[in-house]
Amino acid sequence: MDGNGRWAQARGLPRTMGHRRGVDAVHGAVRAAGDLGIRYLTLFAFSSENWRRPAQEVTELMGLLKLFIRRDLAELHREGVRVKVIGARDNLASDIRGLLEEAEHLTRDNKETTLVIAFNYGAREELARATRRIADKIALGEASPEDVTPEFMDSHMDTAGIPDPDLIIRTSGEMRLSNFLLWQSAYSEFVFMPCLWPDFDRKAFEDALNEYSSRDRRYGGLSREIAS
Ligand code: IPE
Ligand code: MG
Image (cartoon, rainbow, N blue to C red; front, side, top):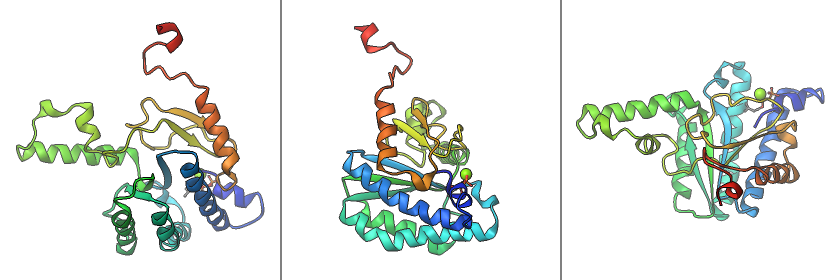
């Protein structure tokens, strides 16, 4: 979800207004995902590098997360959305941590769509966390080095149990991954769109899905037409 700041700047508004409109776009995207039959939607809401922003902007982003959970959790729950949060928890304020846990706990048995919120998330940090979890097990004699396969790694990532993303969409025209799901995106399709996140509406979502539908996913193998 990129481009909130530029969206605001283009209108002579403070960046915070862009973030607020960005939350509206989140609502739209979650609803659209449900309607379009997308079972897993991951949103990169706050990266482990976003702490480098001015304190006031960080506070605003934390405030918006709190507002989103307090205001919308009941509705998400009613619609059968399961919330899962990935990222580091230890350096978050306790009220934020509490809200994230509450959201996960309340919705844990829901079956419609899984909304994965990447918050205080960085892929390298996640890989380090997974490695530490595995190293701890080996140190305790609960696993051996030979157990460490890609599947074993999967099951120690924050995303354990969540399928790898088929499609990764980045808005605002930037063409980089910026420390997002490095491990899980090995065979993801990428769609980069010029549209700024607050403008990401259902039409933009459908455009990205149409682009995805035209891709030929080979996973290192051959095209279906050639292989058959
Ligand atoms: C993305 O918009 C929102 C978050 C990082 C939470 P930006 O704030 O990165 O917007 P730009 O890139 O400055 O336009
Ligand atoms: Mg940005």
